[in-house]
Image 1 (cartoon, rainbow, N blue to C red):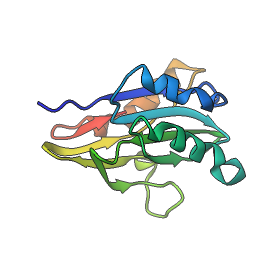
Image 2: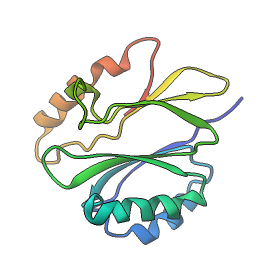
Image 3: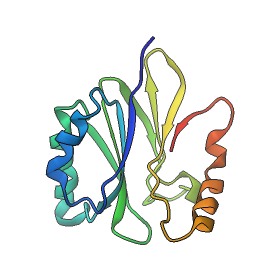
Image 4: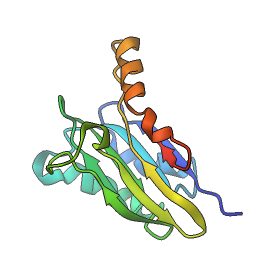
Length: 151
């Protein structure tokens, strides 16, 4: 049996990027890592994002996608081990024909695992349970039978 290790972490504004290798070491062999609050990681040519990718490569997390937040600099990110997961799709909000329910969704294939693994890092609204519930209800199609989805 092959195990797939998935973790998620709120970076709490993303300023402590140098601590990422230490955090990744606490859960060895992570295959997929979802981040929230990559604050301003788009700035200066995405230097912070690429620094994080470099720091996490030694933990096997050698690829990254960043989804721009629609209303703040608190972006979400997906890091993965390209030796285990092969990305086959990514729904970037900057391109036409990407619906709001698809934004930030990445799809991967994994040897010996079917169906396709779908992953999305979601930053839930902190100010209102009603807003969080609305966000969750918009994601219910991802929980359909026959789909493997991590949110």
